[in-house]
Length: 317
Ligand SMILES: [Zn+2]
Ligand SMILES: [Zn+2]
Image (tube, rainbow, N blue to C red; front, side, top):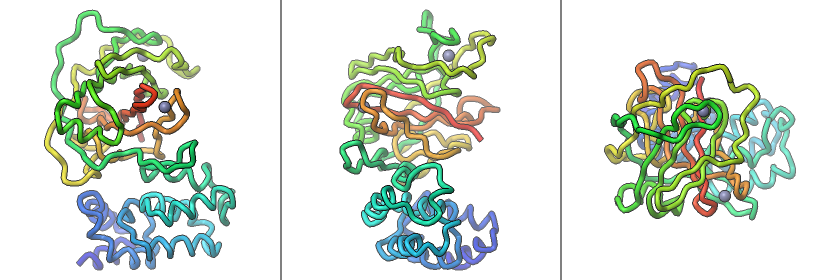
């Protein structure tokens, strides 16, 4: 039955691609026995279909890249390897980062940079790090009382928005944040308006402290004639546990999640930590559709516990 869907996907049938994507999000291993067929039929996108790729499939993709037969597919094939997160994919990507394969001149990042698409990275110390956790919860929006004297954004004067208020004394929250190493209360405060234009950083402490990072650099293209705007009167609270870390949507209502893996609207954008330069750990996603009836885009929350930095960035179509 999955074979039929794959045959249809090969004819660029959007419904079939959707169907396969839904399986990749709920139980990627169900696709594992069929990935060879998917590759044979050149259904390379979306690369997340290949999350459960095994050693054989990964070897085939590496051979295809090394052969130089399909330089125009290099981007898609690297995306597949990144999503597989397989150790052999990692070693090939390390090799290609110094010996670029055919087709590399068309790429915007080097081969190892693709790791971010699969939620992992090789740090400055040369060690591999997973940027995301495997435990995820739905994030449900609750109304918040308009706070008196909330701190305001130094750029646009809008009151800052508490995008997350978490405490690892709750075992569920501790599990969702386990990959970050955070222990204690975590408050991530940002400007809902300016975060749409650039990554905004804050210093955070395990006592729930949060302060705007003085090193945030105001982009020249930020509108400067707008009136201050109230942030969403909503904040995420813990909802149901999700059976897969991929059950997230940056587009649909009810898609906001704590933990798990992000769905990127554009290319992966794991923020770099201003303290150490390494990519930060992913905390969660708040979809615009959960904030507003006409909301779009998504806010992505990040944390680097060793340096005490949190970050929020935003993507839209
Ligand atoms: Zn602002
Ligand atoms: Zn850092």
